[in-house]
Image (cartoon, rainbow, N blue to C red; front, side, top):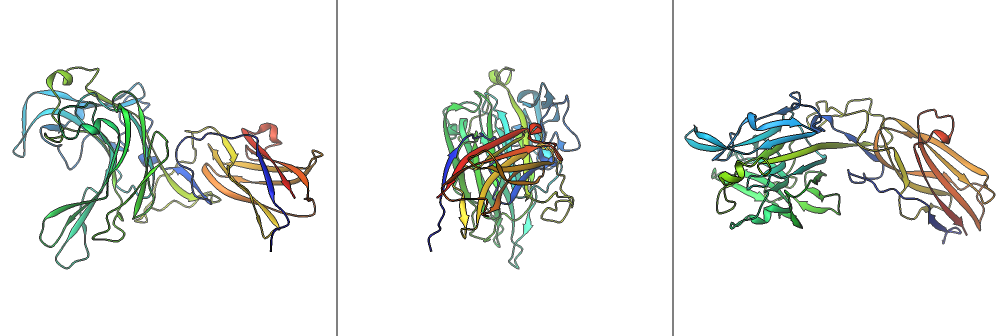
Length: 417
């Protein structure tokens, strides 16, 4: 049976949001503190990061050295440099200094991870990626095993006469399933690469690179907050292949020719070219929109994950999502909204008729984070056909005296016919 009501909407205001992406209905993003850093101090936060790679010296001839990692002026910096003399490590010769900043916590799992950085203007890499750092046992009795690597961004700072010069532009994302089968041969079972094109070099300016690791099967990538591109992980060996937690890596390394050529001595000696700058890294996990998460969030292994009770990256904001409301069985109206709150707030929703009389009030909590939910109002006798109504929504401090204390509001007009 056709509903006797339909809605005509006039949107009066709209807010442009920054990252992370809009959460699913009924969820909200909260900050995962263990993998977030604004780099505003004068040294690396030793509680979160190594200034070296604990299990990898670097790809020869580039050696990871703590001396090349620094923090200042709001950035974490990794500087490439020609070493004064060759260094032999495990039979390999290193003569270029690079750097690696690695998370001490190795339990990054499903969530949204983003990093803002500017690449060095050399052929040394500037990267943001995740890896298991070890192998996990497979399902076969022969002792097969696998490891995971999720590359949100791998880039270099200039082009040249080599195969991989396209890594100097845009965003390059990969998902590697490193598999060693019964024959003991290691295979790279990678997903099809995701590439965002750009005419600008990655070293020209800062860019934001993001990845939403949704589950064991898929990830969505974001370049400067534009529309995402999606990747399905390789499932040849394991249906749900990306099923292990990982560590975060921010690395500047050397790449071999003919893929990438080594940086030359001139650019390595030039401080205007040899340094990559990381402005910040931010990470988020999804929780229920109406949960104050007083119980600790548990990661895959059941251990505690540090979550932040405030959301200082964003201004307080609220909006009606730009899509039609709908009538549920012709007895209620559903208002889809989203909000951003620095700390726990409350939301006030008010409906006025054409005589400017408030006929409906609803106050409910808005817990810290970036949330999305549907607010439902019953279609009682206060709503009449052929009447226009204004619905307004406010986000304000807890136990606010009135809407004059609100941080932000949104409104639109609807009509029941």
